[in-house]
Length: 410
Ligand code: C2E
Ligand code: CA
Ligand code: CA
Figure 1: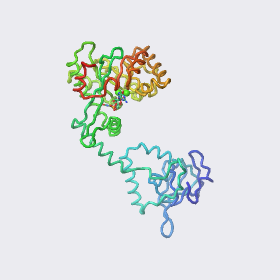
Figure 2: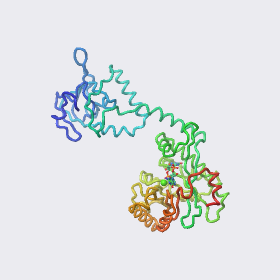
Figure 3: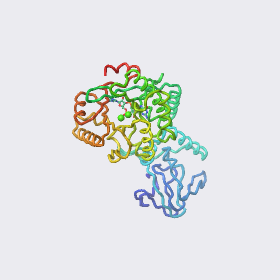
Figure 4: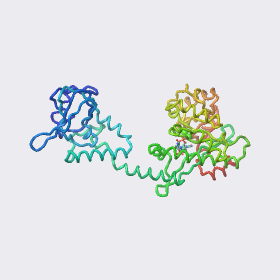
């Protein structure tokens, strides 16, 4: 609050609450918009200047929000707020709001911005310039909080992704996973790929979060599963079962665990494809486990009963509360690439990897290390008791035909 008549200083703003005595002004029309408020008790009125006086636009009591328009739109105050009785207000700072809006979906941001503009049109008048003092270096500024332009691009990409799922444009690449003891092929991880005619190759790190936000991740995962099952069958046909059947690991996102009949879906998909359940491993992350432990435990038990195994992905990056390892029917862990990347250069990474491997070994879990790029890493990981490895050293993700061709060479 920096405009004339700013009452905050003398009103004793503590951390988040503001007391306004009856008759006092919270801010005036034209002031800087740098906070919004929720009325906790009392009553305030919203007053706009007219040519020859004032008009009361609204009276707001407990639970109502005031001062949000200028803050979100980055414009000056469009009205004056005055207390009609002693009032307590909860402050929402610009920093708090900016933080919350930063992750808002751009389409929601566009709708919010449109609503604000329409409301302003109804109330008459264009937005005032925001007369806030320049923000000190390093502090947050007073630009509008929403960027409506991003929405169109997000909507277009979401539409393209939906079309890609429907038209089978999403493909799957397979990255080899080998036994560290002798370099024999153990299986592959199935990784989704999106080759868009105009956008080119869109990386999963870009489209997986987009699919999550757009509610399309279930469809993406199902497409990967169907292709991975067919690949597992072809793999078996090409490779045979000598030295164990090669497996295919598939990533499963959180939303699919909400599906009513996930286990029977997977079972049905396997039956139709001709792949064998023991060829499939589900990769899930710790955050999925912790979000809904009971449900996830039920599903993993169901999967285990039909012969499908599960692996905890990105291990070591999440909560890593090792205590839950034994309370879920998990068959293995995948030590995150971040530890492997600095295994040789950072003694802490080495110690953490060693501790994880010891514990997982004691629980008789299968240990896979991912992101292996050098022979020295293989040597260290083997000594630490890791069973399997995945990384560019053994092969990059590749098309299914190339993966099947590569088998004899591994
Ligand atoms: P992730 O499950 O941790 O997969 C491993 C990622 O590490 C892959 O990236 C892989 O290409 C990359 N990688 C493997 N070896 C190396 C290495 O030696 N060095 C380096 N620098 N990187 C390596 P990718 O394919 O871009 O996938 C990124 C993430 O996208 C995956 O991480 C996974 O979380 C997600 N994802 C991919 N496909 C699917 C899918 O079908 N469904 C879901 N839900 N998520 C998927
Ligand atoms: Ca994975
Ligand atoms: Ca991973």
